[in-house]
Image (cartoon, rainbow, N blue to C red; front, side, top):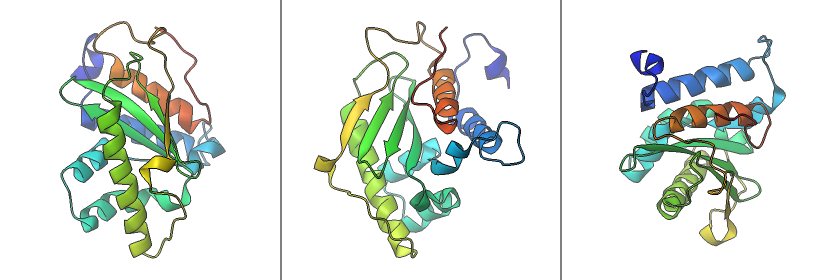
Length: 188
């Protein structure tokens, strides 16, 4: 919790994943006063799911970590991405039935997309295959050429002006997506 209290504290994977899961629990729980039906259509992935794919974890391990999301039933996949070299968090929203990836980078940068797209497309392919293997057939394209990627934040108008709030911005965007919005309407 010290990271959350420090003015320039950076979020690590545990904090980001835990807070994102808490947001999903708030917005996807019909007994919560913050319940919103749009959250039901979102599969919130853990930032480590992409790492497991990058390092070729067995299908059984991926299934163990992903099956609780019931992603094969959800039109929107929310994928937090950590870029260790840059010490930077971004978010990818996959509209799987539309074959679209929406990138949110609070700094507005487009660098790093190429590698992220390769990794995310591999994750999508593996998730689709694994779901079918466990009896949940998915009818989405896994061909890279059929997918498009678009930014949700412009380099000319970045939301973040410092070098440490990217994780907080990713959490704000996750909350917005879970509530059915395409972007966050806040500023520093």
